[in-house]
Image: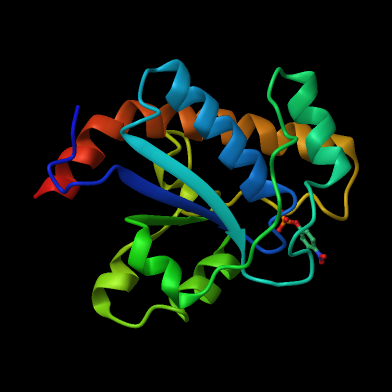
Length: 171
Ligand code: 4NP
């Protein structure tokens, strides 16, 4: 599968700190794409809207739950999203509504704005009142389990949608 646009489909995943939710989604989606043979067609990375954790590895609680479930959390280092991310990403998927508003505020053009969507807009069981990946930062381990379940289910749906997304990009 080629995109016809001369580059892979490039997805940015965005949360607040880039140490819990979006890096978990980055690692999970990347692995699921690789397992589906789509590693060359779809590229994924992640960022936070805030800069407090720039350069840091994943939160140890997020890393532990990923490792428990067979994922490798070790390569992540936190980055902060800027307007320039719109130049080299086709989709910018945000974890919650506050991240969505913050990323939309960075958009410079209608085209930039059209790239911003809620990550869980791909979740087949999301509803208008339940479309966020909640911030697990202040809670206990069960919050991270819940976040991983949401991320795995949504990532499966993104992988299933990948051929359509790549086709739309080529248009
Ligand atoms: P994340 O979680 O947005 O899922 O990475 C957070 C990480 C750090 C902070 C808040 C949320 N913080 O306030 O430093």
